[in-house]
Image 1 (tube, rainbow, N blue to C red):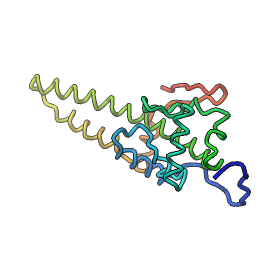
Image 2 (tube, rainbow, N blue to C red; image 1 turned 180 degrees about the horizontal axis):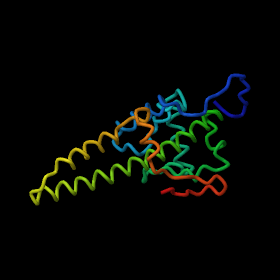
Image 3 (cartoon, one colour; image 1 turned 90 degrees about the vertical axis):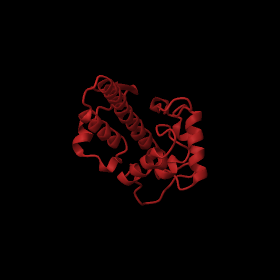
Image 4 (cartoon, rainbow, N blue to C red; image 1 turned 30 degrees about the vertical axis):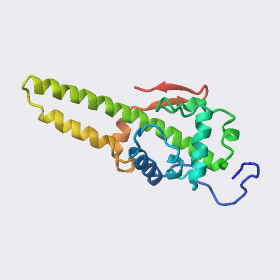
Length: 182
């Protein structure tokens, strides 16, 4: 579909990602060999498009404009420019807005994943050190299991308290730079 002809349908269009759509893309990505790299089919699972071919085209366009990179799992949301609508004219303007929401959501998921991965590595190192010195590791192993579970917990199942305690990046819309909130 092209943006050459405007969508004049009277029905309201939802450009946000529902909890179900977040769960679908999260579950799909967790099954991928590199979960933090958005795959070409992720946009199909997130409800951006209903076509596998269009999903792959969206992925290719995001690689071309620098929002996605093949060598890094991070999403470069600062590469979303005023030409974004033209660069992704293969999907409707409503789908483009939903895509931007998906990109910011996945960027936050990446931060969350890296935080838990860091804690996981730290716990494994502590467990190894404790085992080599003959110490007890029960509480560390329990926490390691908790962290592994938290990494794989779908967005809709996370508690409101966990969502409030997450330290995620803040964005300044004026100059499009990231302000990391601590």
